[in-house]
Image (cartoon, rainbow, N blue to C red; front, side, top):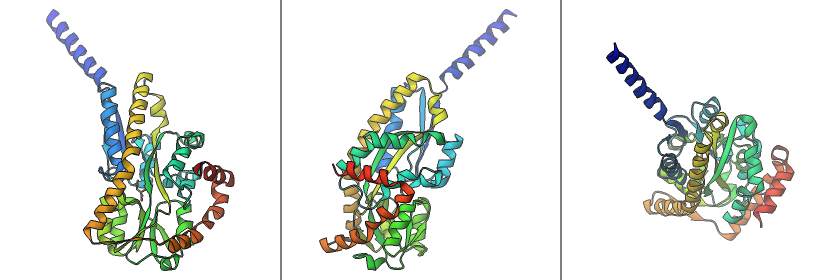
Length: 328
Ligand code: LMR
């Protein structure tokens, strides 16, 4: 009897021990390759989060749309099927937070410095707060730099875009941008772009070189216009209920890990994109074209009216405030 009691007590201790040690799991889903700035920063966050919490948190990173595609991943986050994402700022419109599309406005950031003034200042914070009523907490902004255009036809001047089918992210600003160039925009999930380019469903697309290169899009695109006409960045977001429900000490450690991963991400973004651009050139499969000053001016003339056109959707005040801050 005594022995049986002892065995039962021992078993209870063991299973309680196992229960007490069960880590908190954070599923972090994203759509790009691991060797992109976002992919590497997600891995960095995982390593730091697990280390800082002494293993009480386990971060499972699912890259390359392995778990969910663009639209699905936001739904999965809201439902709690995943806890963390880093969607591009161009993908929040369908969620009802249209303001983030301000980041898609052509030429709104004259420099990275101007961008950081916005994302790290009060405007950036206020914008993340707009996610709270959607059950989402914004933790940080990650960077991927300025976009280039790619296509199977040359794109030196706006007239070259006439009738071209261009893949875009689900942003009304990007839709207006492509129309301003005379192209026909088509929203596709990131995971579908390579095949759409390969099969001719679309003629071209836009992205920073790191995304083009790691998805091998350059292999099915004859031309890249080094246009830097718009920006691509991310909001790292968590399910609010999950985040608020974490023990305070764990949340503190995770916030620290996120701050470190963010510093790292911003430090590698430009370099990774420069390396990707050099690698694309080196393959010789794609002709990379630097726009002349006159061509750049023609692009600007075609694209800048999009700011005015989008005032109704994004808000004149927000566009004005960001333009002012970004020019500092
Ligand atoms: C895209 O969908 O084109 C990109 O924003 C993907 C990403 O997350 O970088």
